[in-house]
Image (cartoon, rainbow, N blue to C red):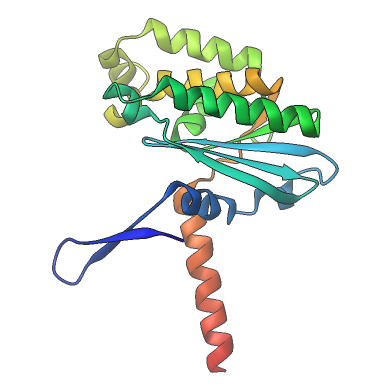
Amino acid sequence: MPCARRQTAPGIAIDIIDGAREAEVIYANHVEHRLDPRRNYLYIDVGGGSTEVTLIVKGRMVETESFPVGGVRALQGKVDPKVTAELRVWVEAQCKKHGNMVAIGSGGNINTIYKLARIKEGKPIDIERMRAIRAMLRKYSLEERIVTLNLRPDRADVIVFAAELYLSVMKWGGIRKMVVPEVGLADGIVHLLYNRHRRSRAKSA
């Protein structure tokens, strides 16, 4: 997959992956193994620069797309309404084609929202509860989200936008519930590195 490599400190190279590769890395968590294989799921990850959406049909990934819509872009006023419209068209088309779905939420923002909702671990959060958390977040200023809700500054400034986007995707897809396994990009990287290590050891054995 395409990526750009940048050299930072001596001896340290950073690969910058594109949205499609990010979606693959996130999917490497294989959360589908913990889900009902008879159901269809829409995996949603809202990040700072992009949103990845992955369609899982009966335990198999069949479609994945990345859209340059994210929290940091929103703060910078760089979210293109045309791209948001493209995201909506994609979600509506996939959900119409594959019927009743459950969402899977991934990323730091939805993990925080899930914790604020005080849902029992392993239980899905419904769209009404998510709307209530969004309304609560809107009432707080940025400083209050940091001090009162104890959110990190880099989370407090984007979480309202992220909540809006998760809710929009669920609304477009006619989705009422979301599973939040509390894994994300970092977890996917760990899985990929571990699997690469296992393959390397198997070849050298």
